[in-house]
Image (cartoon, helix red, strand yellow):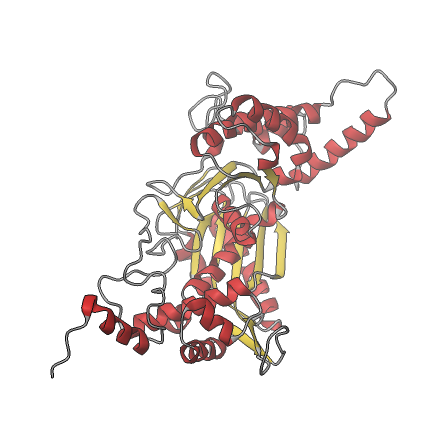
Amino acid sequence: MTAPPPRNGRDSRDSRDSRNGRRPNSPTPTGQSGSNGSNGSNGSSNLSSPNTPSGNGFRTTEGPASQQGMRRANLALVLGAVARLGDTSRAQLADATGLTRAAAGSLVSELIDAGLVSEHGVALEGRVGRPSTVVSLSNRGPAGLGLEIGVEHIGACVIDLRAEVRTRIRIPAANRARDPRAVIEQLANVATSALTQAEELGLDPVGAVVAVPGLVGATSDTVVHAPNLGWHDVDLTKQLSPLLPGLPVAVENEANLGALAELRRGEVGSDFVHVSAEAGIGAALVVDGMLLRGTRGFAGELGHMPVYPDGLPCPCGSHGCLEQYAGEEAVLRNCGLQDEAGDRVAVLVAQAHAAATTAAAAAPPPPPPPAVHQALDQAGRALGIALAGVVNLVDPETVVLGGAYADLAAWLTPGMHAELGARVRIRPWDPTDLVVSALRREGPVIGAATSVIQRVLTDPASLQDRS
C-alpha cells in the first residue's frame, strides 16, 4: 500500500531538521529562511557590522538553505549562545539552541579547533550525573584591534572574545590640519605596537576598525568630511591597509563606535542616545539594538543642531549650532582657556575642580560662579536644549553622556537636567534617564575593537573564509 503524502510538509520538514542536526519542530536558526531581519535599506543597521546584510547579523537566503549555509548559521548560533550564557556545557548549548546533542557537540569541537571557545575540565555544580566540562569563550586566539584618530591623540586597544581589554595605547598627537599621510603612518606604528603586545598575550587580531571624528562613507573606507582634522574624502582604508598587511581594515564614526561599546556592556538598554565630544560633538541613536544611520549614513550630527537660531555663526554656514556653545573650543573660549595646549579636557577638569575648591573656602557671601563653571553650565544648558528635541522625537530609554562630556559631567548635568525637565513635557523627564558612561573617553577605541569581535561572533565561519 502506498503511504499517504505528508500533511502540510511536516514529515518532510522533520526529516530535513534531522539531517541538519536540529530537533524536529525546533526553531529555525535566526537568519535562515523565514527570518524577517532588515536588510538595512531603512537607514538602520546592526551595530556590529555596518555592511551586514541582515539586521540580526546573519545573512538571509531566498528559499531553502544549503547544508553549508545551515552549518554556517548553526556555528554562529552555538557561538552566540556561548557568549550569552557564559560558562556552560555542551548539553546546555543543545538545550539553548534546539540542536541535537550530537550536532551541538560537533559544532563546539569545530569552534574549539578555530580557537574561538575553550573547554575546561571543571565540573558544573548543581547537576545530577556525570560531571560536564565547561565551555566558554576563549581568552586567547582571535581578537579585535581598535584604532582611533583624535584631534589631539592617537590610540589603539586589543579586545579578546570575552570583551576584555587586553592592551591599550594612547599617545598625544597634534592632528588638526596635519597631513593625513603622516597621521596614518603614525597610526600604523601604534597599531603595530599593539599587535606585538597582543601576540605576546597569545592573541591574534583578525581585523581592525578605525574610529574617526567625522563622517564616513557608506563603504566604511573613506572619511568623507572631518572638519576638526581638516580632512575631506580621505581613503583611510586604502592608505592604512598596506601598512598592516593581512589585516582587514574598516573605518567608522567615533560616536557610533562609542554607542556600540555601551550596547555591548549592556548597562544602558537597547534604546538610547549616545552623545559625546572631543573637538566636535557627535551623537548615535540606537533603537532596539540597531544603529539609525540615515539614508547617507550621516545621522547623528547633533553638533549642528540649532539651539539658538539667531545665535553665533558656525563654520558650517548656519547660526546657533550646538557646537558653538557646547563644543570644546567654545567652552575653552568662554572661560579664557583657548590658548591651552595638550589635553585640554584634562585642563578644563582641573580648572573646574580648582575653582570649586576656592569657592568652598571663600568667606561669605559666596563669590559669583567662576568663569569655567559659567562656561560649563552654558554648555550643559545648550546640550539640554538639543537633547530635549531628540528625546521628544524618538523617546529613548536612556541618554548616555560619553567621551569628554563624561569627564565633565559633574558641571554639565545640572544645566542639562534643568533644560530637559523644562522641555520634555509629554513624557515626564526622569533624571535617572541621563547616565554617564563608565568608558568615558575610551569608548570609541573600545567600540572599534568590539565591532571586530561582534563580526566574529555573528559569523565565525568568516575566519575560515579569511584563511
